[in-house]
Length: 75
Image (cartoon, rainbow, N blue to C red; front, side, top):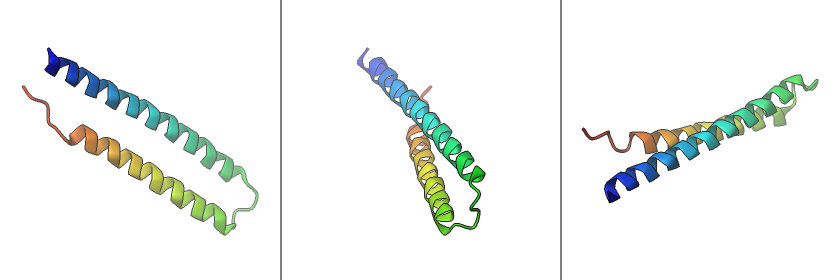
Protein backbone atom coordinates (compact mmCIF):
# COMPACT_ATOMS: atom_id res chain seq x y z
CA UNK A 1 0.00 0.00 0.00
CA UNK A 2 2.74 2.46 0.92
CA UNK A 3 4.53 1.73 -2.34
CA UNK A 4 1.40 2.49 -4.35
CA UNK A 5 0.83 5.77 -2.47
CA UNK A 6 4.47 6.72 -3.04
CA UNK A 7 4.12 6.11 -6.77
CA UNK A 8 0.88 8.07 -6.85
CA UNK A 9 2.53 10.97 -5.03
CA UNK A 10 5.46 10.98 -7.45
CA UNK A 11 3.06 10.86 -10.38
CA UNK A 12 1.08 13.77 -8.99
CA UNK A 13 4.27 15.75 -8.40
CA UNK A 14 5.44 15.16 -11.97
CA UNK A 15 2.04 16.13 -13.33
CA UNK A 16 2.11 19.31 -11.25
CA UNK A 17 5.60 20.13 -12.53
CA UNK A 18 4.48 19.54 -16.11
CA UNK A 19 1.46 21.81 -15.65
CA UNK A 20 3.70 24.48 -14.14
CA UNK A 21 6.21 24.11 -16.96
CA UNK A 22 3.46 24.37 -19.55
CA UNK A 23 2.22 27.57 -17.93
CA UNK A 24 5.76 28.99 -17.94
CA UNK A 25 6.25 28.08 -21.59
CA UNK A 26 2.98 29.79 -22.53
CA UNK A 27 3.95 32.91 -20.58
CA UNK A 28 7.38 33.03 -22.20
CA UNK A 29 5.93 32.54 -25.67
CA UNK A 30 3.53 35.38 -25.00
CA UNK A 31 6.42 37.60 -23.89
CA UNK A 32 8.44 36.62 -26.96
CA UNK A 33 5.47 37.41 -29.19
CA UNK A 34 5.27 40.84 -27.59
CA UNK A 35 8.97 41.33 -28.25
CA UNK A 36 8.45 40.38 -31.87
CA UNK A 37 5.96 43.26 -32.16
CA UNK A 38 8.50 45.75 -30.80
CA UNK A 39 9.59 48.28 -33.45
CA UNK A 40 13.22 48.39 -32.25
CA UNK A 41 14.47 45.14 -33.81
CA UNK A 42 18.19 45.89 -33.38
CA UNK A 43 18.17 46.44 -29.61
CA UNK A 44 20.89 44.39 -27.93
CA UNK A 45 18.85 43.87 -24.77
CA UNK A 46 16.24 41.99 -26.84
CA UNK A 47 18.81 39.46 -27.94
CA UNK A 48 20.18 38.99 -24.43
CA UNK A 49 16.70 38.66 -22.94
CA UNK A 50 15.68 36.11 -25.56
CA UNK A 51 18.80 34.01 -24.91
CA UNK A 52 18.17 34.07 -21.16
CA UNK A 53 14.55 33.00 -21.61
CA UNK A 54 15.51 30.18 -23.95
CA UNK A 55 18.23 28.97 -21.56
CA UNK A 56 15.84 29.05 -18.60
CA UNK A 57 13.21 27.08 -20.50
CA UNK A 58 15.78 24.56 -21.69
CA UNK A 59 16.99 24.09 -18.12
CA UNK A 60 13.46 23.62 -16.81
CA UNK A 61 12.62 21.11 -19.52
CA UNK A 62 15.87 19.27 -18.78
CA UNK A 63 14.98 19.06 -15.09
CA UNK A 64 11.57 17.62 -15.85
CA UNK A 65 13.03 15.11 -18.30
CA UNK A 66 15.64 13.99 -15.79
CA UNK A 67 12.91 13.38 -13.21
CA UNK A 68 10.84 11.40 -15.69
CA UNK A 69 13.76 9.32 -16.98
CA UNK A 70 15.36 8.71 -13.59
CA UNK A 71 13.57 5.45 -12.84
CA UNK A 72 12.24 3.15 -15.55
CA UNK A 73 8.81 1.64 -15.03
CA UNK A 74 8.83 -1.68 -13.20
CA UNK A 75 6.77 -4.49 -14.56
